[in-house]
Image (cartoon, rainbow, N blue to C red):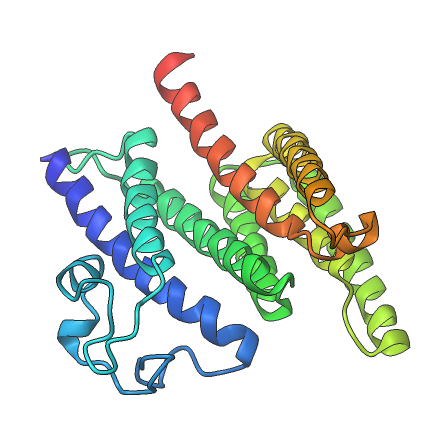
Amino acid sequence: MNLFLYIILFIIGSLFGSFYTLAVYRIPKRQDITHTHSYCPKCNHKLGLLDLIPILSYIFLGGKCRYCKQKIRPRYLILEILSGISFALLAYVMKLDINTMSVIKIAEYSFYVLFITYIILIVGIDKENRSINKSVNIYGVVISIMYMVYLCIVEKANIYRYGIYLILYIIVILLDTVTLKKYAKSTYTNGILIMLINMIIFTGEYITATSVIFALLTIAIYMLLSKLQALKSKNRKTDKQLYDELSIGFYLGVSNLIIFLFALFYTVYIS
């Protein structure tokens, strides 16, 4: 019975993955992500139902648009598969059982799904545009506050601890407001700070700290490889140019998601 549950959650996750690809493409362009019909970004042709079946449509169409025959980026297929796996894996590490499922378990799973959605959107947009999208960060703040309220009411968590996080939110948001008025734009750093607070609330201080260390190590390796590659080419980039192209949110988000799922698995099945 649990296998059936995981299959259903994988399908739901792949549907979410299809939405993520749409949202990552449209949100930076400030396009509607809920009411506007899906279309091919190359020929703008509206997509039919058979074009929108997660994973299967990509495979049966040979990775090409049915109408203009242009290649569809593999990231669509990859994100749909990874989203499906994430939804099923989360249920597995949480020991979600169809026979003993409770309202609290469902609520916890739902909150984690909302958090995974937040991380994937942040990661996808930052990877493509080197930007921490403000509207996605606001969504992250909203679900984090909802989660804190849930923890304090249902699980009797320490309200003072989460009060500190609310104060941190206020400080960073005020800092971002001042920056917005002074420079007419939000800074990348402020977006990262809000992202870190959201990560701490959902995954805890230790997992977030580990994620930061893992992300920094990955970034260091990337920078080193980039410099070694630059030595072989004539167009060498300065450290500032490399930093300006660095999608820090991407590395942080991926690291946090991997370590969070591993920590859940370790806590439930090993410790």
